[in-house]
Amino acid sequence: MRPALRAIRAVDGLVARATVPLTERRDVVLPLLFHSLVENEADLAEGSIHPAYAVTTGQFRAVIAGLQAAGYTFLKPAELSADRCPTSGRYALVTLDDGYANQLRAVPVLEELGVSAVFFVATGYVDSDRSFWWDVLYRELTRRGADAPAISTSMAMYRAQPREAIEGALRDRFGADCLRPRGFNDRPLTQRELRRAATSQYVTLANHTDGHNVVTQFGHQELIAELNQAQEHLVAFADSRPRLFAYPDGVTDQRLRDIGPAVGIDYAFTTEPRPTNLPLRERDFGLGRFTITHEASPQKQILALRSRWSVLNTYLRLAAYRRRTQTPA
Ligand SMILES: [Zn+2]
Image (cartoon, rainbow, N blue to C red; front, side, top):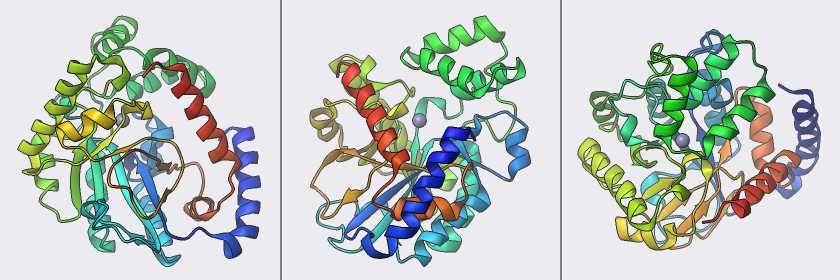
């Protein structure tokens, strides 16, 4: 972890330890965001996926169990509606983005702890045998000796482009074979795996677009078509129409307020780290989520989640706000 980030986390930890016992929020949902689940640290060192978006299965379990021990109840995705959601108390929600095969590791943990989770799937990747572009960029640049800041800069440059353009640029830069998955850790789910996972009562599939493009790239009709395409695929995979959506790369779009209900979506999640206050609104297209990382201990992250004050989260929220105001919606 970078020294500045470590220092910010340390300050946040001190503040949280001092304030959580007296000032912990009430009547709140803490939505958690996970991406890849790896077996252990060696899986990360193998380098096929971007480590910033991964936790070990043990960390995944520890964060959920730790919040349960601290008095939080995990919401079932079906409870995300104004009339079914509790209006008081402390709650959390597990979400996993993108549709990695490695997220199958979550299912036994969810079953053991009796916790349901939302799997936001980019349906165009299912069965594609194509790695996610950010993992490809990470592993190719790492192999060439790039450090974390250089990789972040490069990633930011690609992010605003359509996925096909990014993948074309990566093939040109790193070779035709670079998008091929290296193994279980970096490949997307297959249709068969998704269908099987969706039979678990603890797994709910939801919309993360078809192609994992930032939604502000689309014209009005294109955006409707993109969301509908993902909806149709998910209906075919799990036999139920998703009501939840997660913005690819967390880039929000005001148009979801109109387009969402038209395609059956009532709630959309960003990557801005903030809680949802209860009671839940009838519809909400800007719900925050807290990204869980392998870079800090589960205990420290749980304390930070429960704290009202966090320098790191304030910084991340400001960064998200800046991104939003720079991008025409
Ligand atoms: Zn995503």
